[in-house]
Image 1: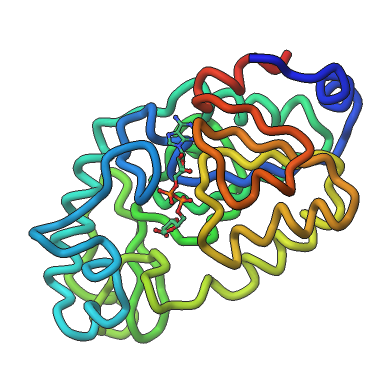
Image 2 (image 1 turned 180 degrees about the horizontal axis):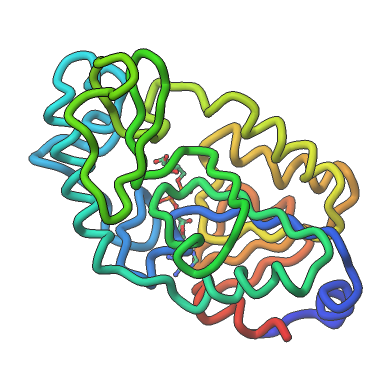
Length: 238
Ligand code: APR
């Protein structure tokens, strides 16, 4: 794997870095991706974008919980990989490191990353369908109903057909427009608005680097494409 001298020098001197991650960064931890590379997720014959939809929450919330409880139990056994740990270590290295993820698996936090901007929510949280109160499910069961208002709880993740959490993207976009170096790791760059963040960084003059074993629609826009697995490529940065 060749990392250009220009990128190595940039990596050594910049202060403001933004990292955008997708399902691919967790593939080496055993988490199925949604599209390219790893095996694709289907539940009881239902494609993931059907069972993981706002419409399904309306129609059959217990089925949605069954799917997310299965995924959470599956994730419980999994651990972060060298890519997650490398990015966590960058918090000490760079004056301003912004980590934005599309993943709901919580593996960045398990690796020690703090202040992760979760664009699509987190599978370890439940949220009240009425008042929005959230409940952690890390080593604890969720209550049967909201303790504040008694209404039903749902997974605190962005489902198909839903908007992102208010402010999350805008906050990430503001930081993308100020970063000097932007890493795009393990995403097919097909889902917006997340895939728009590297475009914002590029337009603001940042050096954009893609890490992915496959090319994506974003590759043409990148200053450098590192073709490989995140767990093998990111630890090469010294
Ligand atoms: N290292 C780096 N990238 C990898 C690896 C790896 N070890 N293995 C696979 N990839 C790449 C694939 O080549 C693909 O481009 O990761 C990407 C995974 O793409 P998707 O499955 O589309 O995941 P993502 O881009 O995160 O999807 C975005 O879509 O389904 C919704 O809400 C869901 O957050 C998700 C969003």
